[in-house]
Length: 126
Image (cartoon, rainbow, N blue to C red):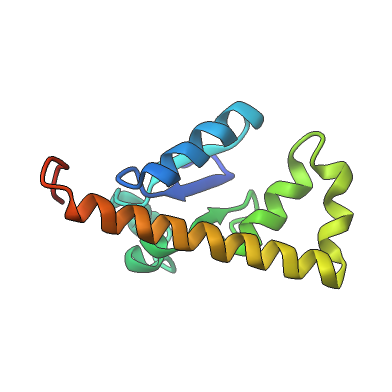
């Protein structure tokens, strides 16, 4: 399968991931999204690890570079209209600390969300 780059890999079984995907689709119509659970992506990009992609957001750029976690935030901040004008703030030491802290908190929320859905008797199982 041919993928139109850039591609964001996301976990469709994670409610937080779905929310971010919806927001990004609204902000950037040129981004494409592929489920990190889709096996074909790993054939097309063998350097990807399914487990790693389900644990952290991944993005494949137009030039086939693979970005992970906070690198994706940097990439998106540089290309989203309005946000790109403030992207220079992320380049400072303080901006880097804030971005890393924000990403860490989002990851904690995602893990909590996954745990809550696993504890839910009404939630579908994998």
